[in-house]
Length: 289
Image (tube, rainbow, N blue to C red; front, side):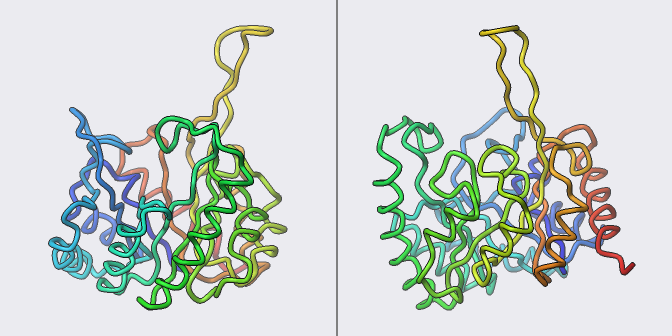
C-alpha cells in the first residue's frame, strides 16, 4: 500500500513546497489538483489554492509538473481532475495529459443530481435520465482511456449520480475495468451513499481502482424543532463518524494494496503538522500484527 496527498487539501503551499514537504515527511506520492479556479484573497481548498494547476494552458505546464514531481522523488497516485464526462474536448485533453505524465489514472467527474448546485444552477432533471446520459458518456470515456493507455476514475461523491458503490458499479458494469474504475471515498460516504465498507469494496470487485480517505461528522445547527437542521463538516481522520481503522481492515480483507490518497479538509492543525500526523496515523493502521 502506498500513501499520497491530494493537493486540494494543501492550499497554502506552492507546487514546489507541496512536493518537497510531502517528500520530506515520507509520503510516497502526490495527486495534483488540476482545474481552473476562482481567485481568492487568502488561499482556500476550492479557490485560490496555490498547489492547483490550471486546466487552461495545461499542455504548456506538463514539463513543469513532471519536473516538480520527479525532483521531489514522488510518484503520481493519479491526477485529481475536475473535467465533467460530458465535456469531451477537455476529457480528451486531461486523458492525454495523464498519459504524457505517466500518472496512470485520472478522475473524470460524473453528472450532478438534478437538485444539486454542484454544477451551477440545479437542472431539475430526473435521476434516471442523468444516469443514462452519464453511462453513455462513460462508454465513450472508456474507449478514449483505452486509446491513451490510462484509466478514468469515477469518484463516490454526494450530490452526483454515483454517491454509492452500488450506483458506481451500475454505471460502469460491462465496461473494461482496465480503463475505467472507481475511487472509493470513505468521507464522502458519510455525507451520502453510505454503504457498509466491506460490502461496498467487495461489490466493486475489479472496478475498485483507487481510495480517497478523509472523514466527516454531522453537526446540528442552532435552532429547535422545525427550525433545527444538520450539516456535515469535514473533520480530522480520527475525529469523524467513519471508522478509519475498521476501513483499513476492510481494505485488507479484499486484498487492496494500491494507492491511498488523503484529502484532509479539517483545519484544527497547521497544514504541515496535519499532513505529517496523517501519514503517521495511516502507517500505524497497516503495521503487521
